[in-house]
Every structure is written in structure tokens, then in C-alpha cells.
Image (cartoon, rainbow, N blue to C red; front, side):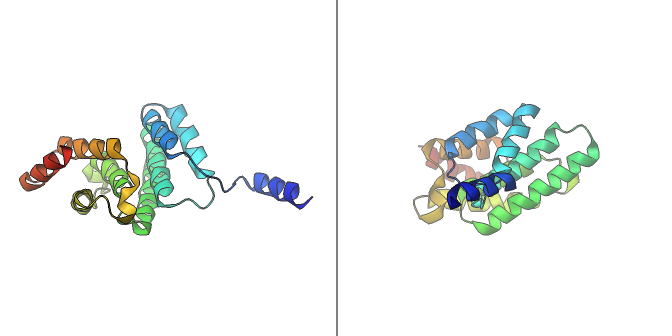
Length: 175
């Protein structure tokens, strides 16, 4: 009798602690980039995860920022961007050595216009990501699989934000 009651209470509160499928979340994130409807669904699904870890927080922050991308009202755009940036900062502070968490913040800041002031961590994140990529098989840095690691490296190279020496390191890591 107690279990059904607890389940009902949890459902009413709107959050249930559950395992999540990170591969699905990654795919949903990509789909949300170009679809307002998918971005809203993605955001709501992530927001419903009780006790999110740093990686989920990073995707939630990215989802909040995507809401800014798709919003029409400039005030809402700034509000969503501010919240997304704050959530990503929490994720990075929780897991500063997680490549994927750092990369999500780096990619957001790369695309946000600099005059908005939301690109203060670009250099630190880039440097840390490259450092972590060089030591990938150690601890919490290993959440990104081989395909994601290659995509992160390719993105870093495409951004034209890396120094010549960093480019050499990244190209060696691609092999």
C-alpha cells in the first residue's frame, strides 16, 4: 500500500528519480538545435529528472540556452540564456574535469555573440578540454565515447579558436 502512495506523490510532484539514456539525450539535443518544438520537449524531459548529475545539468543548461535561440521575445531570449549559462556553470563547478560538460559550455559560448558577455569561459574551457583530451582515460573525463571525442576535436579545430600548438596536439589526437 505504501509503494503506490509514494509513486502517486512522486508523480504529483512531477519528478521521479530514474536512470537516463545519455545516447538518447545526445541525439535529442542535436534535434533540438533546429526545432523549437523539440527544444521545448527536450527541456521538459531534462527538467523532470530528479537529482541530475553534472552531465545532465550541462545538457539542461544547453536546453535552456536553446530555448533562447528559439524564443521570439528579446527579454525571454536573455532570460533563457542567463539561466542556461548559470546551469552550465553549476555543471562545470560540479564536474570540472568532465570533457563533455566543458564542451557543452564551450560550444554555447562560441555561438553566443560576444557583446552579450556570455563568453568569459571560452579560453579556460578550451585549454581544459585539450588538457583532458590528452589524459582521457583517467577518471571523470571518460564520459565521452570515441565518436564524441572525435567530434569535440573536430569542433575545436573548426572554431579557429586554438593556437598553432593546440592545433598540432588536436590533430595528433584525431589519429
